[in-house]
Length: 312
Image 1 (cartoon, rainbow, N blue to C red):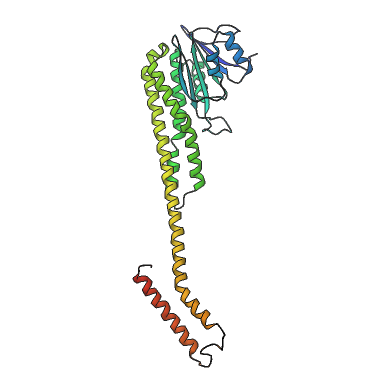
Image 2: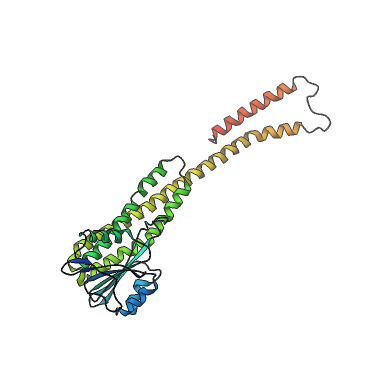
C-alpha cells in the first residue's frame, strides 16, 4: 500500500519509466520523486535519503516565497508558485511547488495538487513529456506559467467592462484589486527566481537555457500585465470617485442656489407674519396680489443677478 507521503516517481535513464514507492535509504539517481509536503513521513524519508537538513527545510517549509538557491556541486533549490485550480479554492491563493535537485536526484513536493504537475505525469504515462530531469524542471515552470497567464488574461475584459459602465461596481473593482495584489506578491519574486537560475545555470539545465529564457520572458510579461491591470483598476476607481464627488458637489451647489433664491422670500414672509400691532395690508383687498407680484419680481431679479455673476 502506497504511503501518504509518496505521490509518484519516474526514472529518466536510457528509457523513461515509472518507479514504485522508494524504500528507506538513498534515492535512485536520474529519477524524479514527487512527495506530499505535509505528510509526516516525508521529512524522515528525505533524511534517510541523505538530503541535508537545510535542503529539507527548504522543500518542507510551511510558508515561503519563490526563490532560487544554489547548494553547491550543481545542486539547487527552486521554490515556485502557481494558481490554485482545485475545486472550492481561490486561484489567487497560490499553491507552492518546491523543487530540489541533489546528487543526481530531482525531488518535488506539494501540499495541494497542481494541475501543472498532473499534466506532466499524465504525459509521461502516455509516453510523452520530458525526457530528462532538466526538461522536467523546465516543464514544471512553463506549465505553472501557462496557467497563471490563462487566469490573469480575462482580467482585462472585466476591468474594461466596468470602465464602460455608467456607475462601476465598486465591490467588483475592490475584488479585482485584492486578487491582483495577491498575485503580485508572489509573481515578482518568481521572476527574480527564474532570473537567478539563468544567471547561475546549474549543469542540469545547461541545455535548457533557451527554454528558461522563454520562461523568464513569460513571467515578466505576466508581471507587466498585473501591474497594468492594477493601474487600470486604480484609474477606474479614481474616475468613479471623481464622478461621485462631482455629483455631490453639483447637488450641493444646486441646493445652495435654491436656498439663496428662497432666503429673501422666507425673510419677507416671516417678517410680514409677525403679528405685532396687526398684519400690514389686512384692510386692502389687493395686498395679497401685490405681495405675490413683488415676490415674483424679486425672484426674477435674483435670477438675473445670479446669472450675471455666473452662479447659474
